[in-house]
Image 1 (cartoon, rainbow, N blue to C red):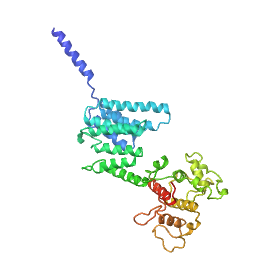
Image 2 (image 1 turned 120 degrees about the vertical axis):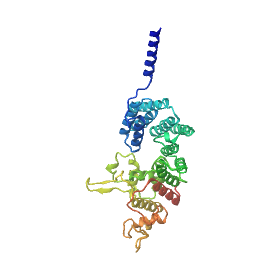
Image 3 (image 1 turned 60 degrees about the horizontal axis):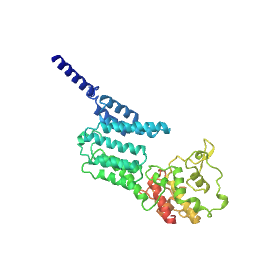
Image 4 (image 1 turned 60 degrees about the vertical axis):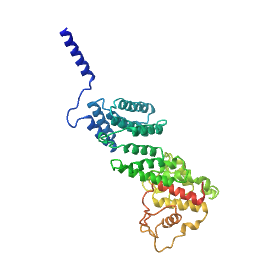
Length: 396
């Protein structure tokens, strides 16, 4: 009987030891929480591969550590997003959601669940599957219901992180008004923390986009451009063609012999905006015309180069001239002795155009009065110029 009891005790000990997760990492800094936090910070720095290694190490230390799976899902989502082959991408996406499932299964605390829900928000915002925004909103609401201890949120640190990433999701969905509200929610929170800085930057961008889009209905191209720090020459050509309808408006106003382009620039042949660029070349819009390139000995459009403010001024003035038929606009401000702009000389080739667009409120100067002719145009500024041009020329 005593022998049987000893065997039973050994069996219990054996079963318990098998069911318990093995402790593989014992050094002070070699623990799942440390590797997870480092991985999240690497993600923030854009070092996805290094982050994935950290999440893998975190899981190796403790395979049931929920945040490690949550972090791995985000890193894998970034990689899956860039996969071109549909079949391979589908396989990678399955792995992503497998990691999210593991994070949910092993979430033992409200803080673990919070990390899982934010990872779900971020993954859905990255991969953008069917109904992705509703899924993000659902995870967001779930995260806000949790009572978490900020001290136990090593990376997210506060509930405001949910507002920040919901704002990012709305930005991705081009719901700029709602994005601005979420970033404002972070900024209005009682205590300034980790997410105030990035929320301040994002709020300014979305606020500018909301103001630019106010009172104007744009297509997908316009909405996609609204948040960009720079607008390419091809983007600007697409905006003019899609939002101003230059082909339709110029038809009948310009002599027939001027309507066919002598060529299509070689550097736009593979551009997704080839037709839009061709239209701008066809109508000979100044500021967006091809330029001779010495190295290739050809006229190139330079579709991927950012549009400079002086180029946009020239294009806007030229469109006004073509649509009104008033050629005197091109020389209306020549002969000035003094320039109102400290950075634009009256002898400059674009001085008249800059005067034309600023006096018509198509473009603005900075508080210093500088026009900044060589600086790139940002997306919101391009949209505001389109809106002002539409209003002045009654283009709707």
